[in-house]
Amino acid sequence: MVTGNVRIRNALSESKPGIGTKLGFSVLYAVLIVVAALQLFPLVWLLFFSLKNNQEVFNLPPLSLPMNPRWENYEKVWSAGNIDVYFFNSVWITVSATVITVMLGSLVTYAVTRMKWKGSSLVLGLFMVAMMIPVHSTLIPLFSLFNKVGLTDHPLSLILSYVAFNMPITIMILLGFYYALPREVEEAAIIDGCSVNRMFFRIVFPMTSSVLATTAIINMIYNWNEFIFVNTFISSDSYKTLTVGVQNFIGQYTTDWGAIGATLMISILPILITFLFLSNRIVEGIAAGSVKG
Amino acid sequence: MDKVLSNKKIIALYVLPSLLLILAIVYIPIVLTAYYGLNEWNGIGAMTFVGVDNYLALFKDTTFWNSAWHSLLLAVFSGISLLLYLIVAMVLAARIKGANLFRKIYLIPMLLSSVAIAQLWLKIYHPTNGVLNSMLESLGFANPPAWLAESSIVLFALFIPILWQYAGFYILIYYAALKNIPASLEEAAKIDGANALQIAWKIKLPLVMEVIKVTIVLAVVGSLKYFDLIFVMTDGGPNGASEVMASYMYHEAFRAYDFGYGSAIGFFLLVICLAVTWVIRKLTASKDTIQYS
Image (cartoon, rainbow over all chains, first blue to last red; front, side, top):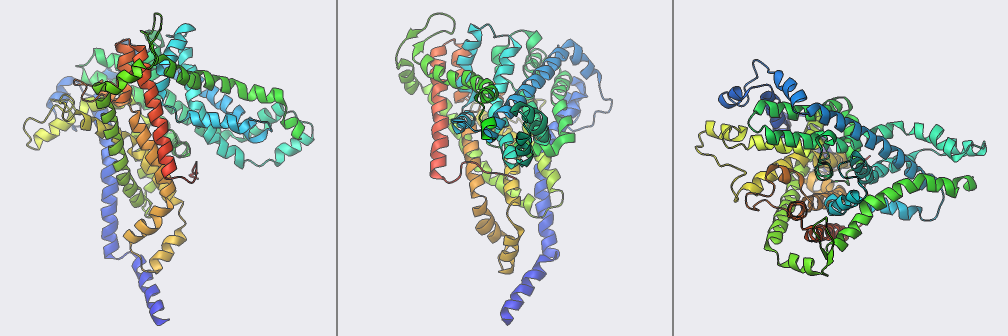
């Protein structure tokens, strides 16, 4: 008994922050700060050189502050490099694909979690297995399929592909929420003679707004950053999105570092700004849909 | 109520659009990839059925096996780095103030487009003006290497930004899993006199084992099908020194116009990814999905 008490007392005294633990914590903090610095350093450097001209990039130390920030880099590439067109394409293609995915995904999730039909688990399985299929293995046939129906070099080829490939992860994130949603309201609505359509659109869909926001943001990030489909399916400048546009633009202006930096900053800023305001939702969505790699 | 919820028309209306889309965009192309692989085809003209010739040629193609070896190396590196991420996550979960901020900072690179990241790292690795070589020179290293132009180091130079991009993703997943462990377990172990290392090894590690298994599948399969940064930064070069399976497939199909052979590679990639997923899941079987709530 006595030794037991002593042990407990020792353990408790250890949990108070002594000099040893304080030192330990500083080491831990140092590790975390080093990792954070490694993650941020390339981006800070990018921001700096996007505001410099070549002379400043080449002759000054890499991390010197841009003393006369050259905002004209941004102005220059925005209009001269077609970046405005690419930006606009990215916006509308990202938004359309996201809206369609979230809408269709909600309908499927509702049918799978609430309605009673044979084959519902098979259908759900098909969506979930699709998550494991590498995009690249579908690239050649998709290219020739779109070619046959005249959709290469057409934004619809992108929207269809984005909706299909993001559908599984969207359904996966929605599923957890739908399973947890209480059914009493719906039961009462049915007894009152409410139709399924009305119930879904008026009652269930609005109740899922928070998870819808999460899935929409995750979809937007994936669509905004998508590269391989645009690069393969789209050939005219007027339909290219930012990822491929940036790639082409930089291919032509390899020597103007400030212009390249500004172009890259313009392509990542929407994501960074979204992250600044909605980081909790993004973190939650990424963790919930972590099967997609 | 069951009658309302098993209305076949409504179910078809809700499920069919998404189902048809995923069949057309994901599943039919998979079947077509296998079929195209049995043909000689330049992507435009007529197909000539050649049986398993492409697949036989694939097994004798040293360029392909080199690219497969590079993909495997990336898988090994990604797998090993998981251990580092787990350690960082354990530090982060150890009652650190600001843990939430840290994990968000770590996640930022994963949210940015691969093209932007690739272009940024091209600049970082730039032989004369890149930040890496500028720093090495100021530290007294004369003639630092041209990282992406030397076949002996290019692959490892590419692994760094790939790991950099995904580090935050895995740290986030591990952190969420570690935070799910009830604090009482750790308290009890402390009272029994366990030190921090023992708690990490004997208590926390077994409890997050399920999540570790999922991340191993993600990291290995993600590496085997990896494409983006390599395609933009080196395009497989110099001289195939950084070619991976997916980039080799792309080159064969869309540069050499050998769609049959490219499809054979694409199908092989699919089989490898599914087989590896299956094997790792079998070896570590118990649950299919894991909730990180």
